[in-house]
Image: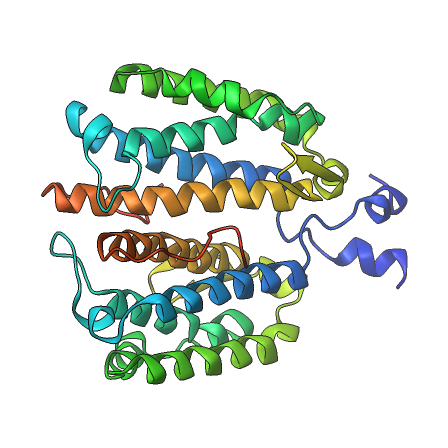
Length: 165
Length: 165
C-alpha cells in the first residue's frame, strides 16, 4: 500500500471522538445520579445487587485510571475505590464526578494514536491496547448505568432519555 | 503534516476491531438470553419496563440495520421490529440472533474506513458518521442487556460475567 493510499484513508475514530463519546456518556450518568432521591441512591437495591451509589463508585474509580490510560501510571484500585465509597452524599459524589471530568480533559492530549495502540495492563486485570481498555471502561459504565435505570423505574422515577448526551 | 507522519500513525481502531467488539458483546447478550427461563424471558418485568424478550427484539431489530451501515439501505424499522416481536420462544429468538451474526460478518467488508466516516441517517432517527451510528447500536445493546442482568438477579439467577465475551 502506498503512502498516498494511507494518506487518503480517514481515521475511523480520532482521540477527540473517543473523549467526546466517553464524556457524553458521563454526562448522562451524571443526570442519572441526579435523578435518584438522596436516600435511595445509597440504600435502594434489587436482587441483592449493589446500590447505585456503589455502582457509581466503581465507575468513578475506573475513571481514576485516566493516568493509567494516558501515562501508564496505574494507581491502587482498592484504595481509590475506598476513597469514592466513603462519599456519603449525592453532592459529594457529583463533585467527585466533575473533578474527574476535568482530569479526563486535561490528560487527553497524551492519548495519541500511538499511545492508544500501545499494549498496557489495567491494574493487572486486563492486558491489551489502551484503546481496548478505554472501550471496556465506557462499556462498563453503560452496563451499570443501565441497571440504575431499572432502579429508577422500580422507584417510579422516569430516567433521562438514553439518547440524550 | 507530511505523508510520512500520517503513514506512521497507526489506526486507533480498525473495522475488524469494531466487528470483534460488537460480536463480542452479542455473544454475551446471547448468553444472557439463554440464562432466562423460557416463561420469564417473555413475561418478567420490573417497574413497568419491557420484558427482556422485547428489549432483545429492539437490539435485534437495530442489528438488522447492518444493510444501512454497510450499504446505506435502511429497512422499515417498525416492520422488522414486528417480525422479531412475533418470535415467541427462546429457541426462535436465538436462531434469529445467530442469523444476524452471520449477516454482520458477511456485510462487514463493505464497512471500509471511508464508509465508516460517511454521514448517513439511521432510519431518520440520527444523522452522523456511520461509525457513530455503529457505536450507538452497541451502546444501546449494552444498556438494555445491563437491565436484563437486574431482571436475572431479581429472579435469583446468576448472570454471566460481564467481562467474558
